[in-house]
Length: 381
Image 1 (tube, rainbow, N blue to C red):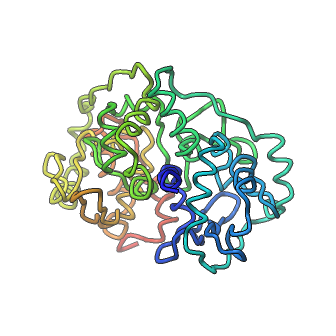
Image 2 (cartoon, one colour; image 1 turned 180 degrees about the vertical axis):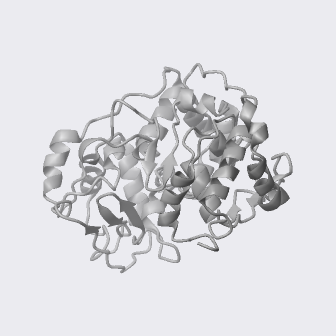
Image 3 (cartoon, rainbow, N blue to C red; image 1 turned 45 degrees about the horizontal axis):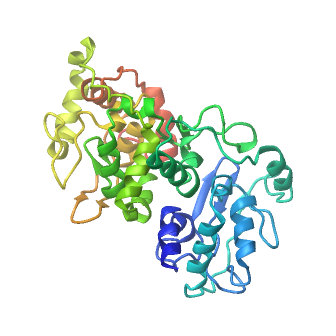
């Protein structure tokens, strides 16, 4: 059961099956998708609403094939990745879950549009798209790389967010871990080349997965619960293995931060916005403040080619983050009401060109498209 507890954390089960202020593993977490909203189910040993009547064979079949004793699962439950779990690890997780306190919490029905609400169609989907394993995004053969492959591809199911989706929501096997759109934000490219382009090293990744903080920034958004509920509990050897797999046995050299472009010096308006709104926490030169705010200079989000995450962070803000040990970052307010589309684009372009080595190509129209979903209009509009 103790091994199962460790594996359940490595598999990040709580992220989808434990709702805020809800009973552990009793379900209810909403999972938005282009097909509608899924809800994490009750996987406590409650006999009516949970998995209390399942056998170990039933549990393994659900993880491996996406089929429970009474229905086909949707791949919002990542059985497409859990398919790679060993039978021994499946049995250990089952043993851990079955000794939890049963929670008599009914499952919330999924809210799916037609024809995606026809669950029987999943039998055909599995026949067409359920494969044993995606191609590897990195190269290696050491014991650490092989262990990291299992942690990343099976237990950690990294591909479910970081690999683009193709026809009918299947994972695109031609682009493993190349990054994918998640509604308004992007799960970034975490291939060796993509990580190196943003300055990541093996030690930085180990620190990020173990503590939530690295020189490139701190975990926020969808990655924050991954750190908080899962990877912070990995053993040191497993942290090394996970980082080794993502970068490969022979990691590419991290690329230095490019010098600001020639037009960056002309981003006067964006610089003024930064000094007025950001410098108090992130530092006048983007150096950050320990235990307050991460550095902007060389920040992984600022260096990413896709500017959506940066724009959404400025619009919406970021909640306060508590990390392992005594590390924490203060909450960042959103500026959707303070900045109009043009001003926010100027600020984003200043950050990208001066602190991220990226082109200053964010447009007001791009900000407007993301602002519509944010539900906040700037003052005066």
